[in-house]
Amino acid sequence: MKWICSLLIGSFLGTGTLEAQTPNPSPAVTQSASASNQDLNIEAYVELLRSQVRKSKSQIVGEVMQLDSTQAVAFWPIYKQFEADYTKIGDRILSLVKNYAENYDQITNPVADQLATELLSIEQQRNLLKKQYYAKFKQALDAITAARFLQVENQLEKIGDLQIASQLPVIRGGEAQ
View 1 (cartoon, helix red, strand yellow):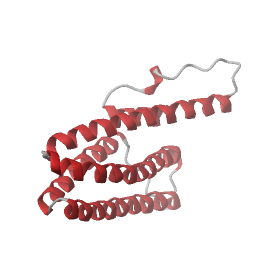
View 2: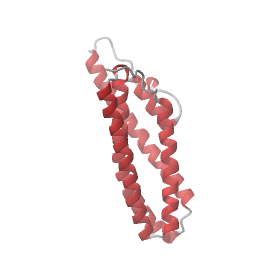
View 3: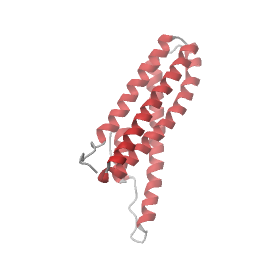
View 4: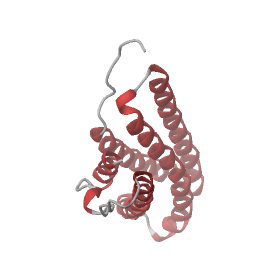
C-alpha cells in the first residue's frame, strides 16, 4: 500500500511519499486493522490532493483561456459541470491504479486483460466526455473558445497521465499463464 501512496503523491505533487504522513502502527494493533486505518488515511490524503489539483487546474485553465467577463459568465458553470463529470473518471483511474498495484506481483493473463480493457474503457469515456463538453462550450461561446478549452484540457490530461505512467512499472512476465 505504501507503493500506491508514493505513486499517487508523486503523480499529483511530484514530491515526497506518504510514509512521513502515516503514523506507525503500535504493536498491539492487528495487521488488518492497521491496513484498514492506513487505507482510510490514504483515501483521505488522496482526496485532499485531488481537491488541490482541481484548484490548481482551475487556476491554470483560467489563465490560459483568456476569457473576458462575458465569456467567463458562460464558461465557468459549464466547466464546473465538466470537472464534476471528469472526477468520476478520475475515480476509475485511481481504482485502476490500485488494482494494478495490488496485482502487480502476480499478474496473470486474465488480470492483464481486465486491466487493459478497463484502461481502454476509461480512455473512451474521457474522449466522449470531452466531445460532449466541447459541444456545450461551442454552443455557449464559440468554436475557437471551445477548441481552446479542448486544447488546454488535453495538455493538462497528458501531463497527469505522464506523471502517473512515469511512476508505474511496466507489466512483467509474458509467459503463458
